[in-house]
Amino acid sequence: MAGNGRKNADQALMLALACGATVESAARKSGVSESTVYRRLKDLGFKRELAKLQAEMVQRATAMLTASTLEAAKTLLSLQDPSMPPAVRLGAARAVVDFGVKMRQLVELEERLAAMEALLGDRTGK
Image 1 (cartoon, rainbow, N blue to C red):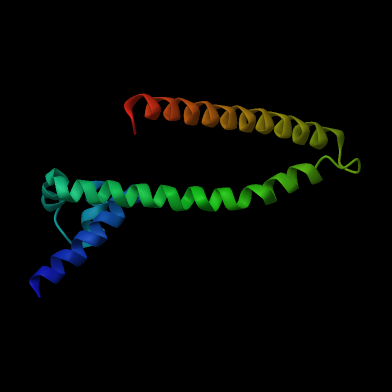
Image 2 (tube, rainbow, N blue to C red; image 1 turned 45 degrees about the vertical axis):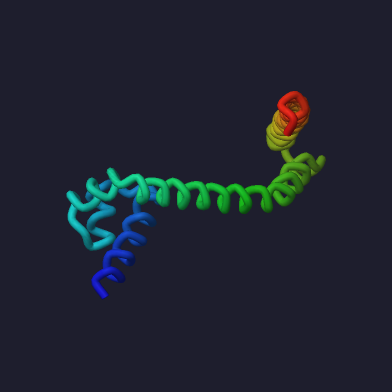
């Protein structure tokens, strides 16, 4: 049973740290001492799991933002309607152009990277 308590404390500690809590706050939230938090942070396995959790959280947040991109684009386009005040239309137009250029650059960069990876794969026989 004691192992379960540590596992639960580690999970609570990991979640608190992954969400950006300070050592003091993470200790309080997980019911352990600050020295325990520092000791756990020195453990390579714990640090690996923490990094994995943080990466998963970033991946989920990125997916949520990606899913809302279409709605955001629709909003920007609706702000360009002639019934909107000129300042609003100008701001929306600038945002659309800015995001369009950035997206095009990102797609081009991804294509170039994929081509380079393919080329390197061909050269190394992978």
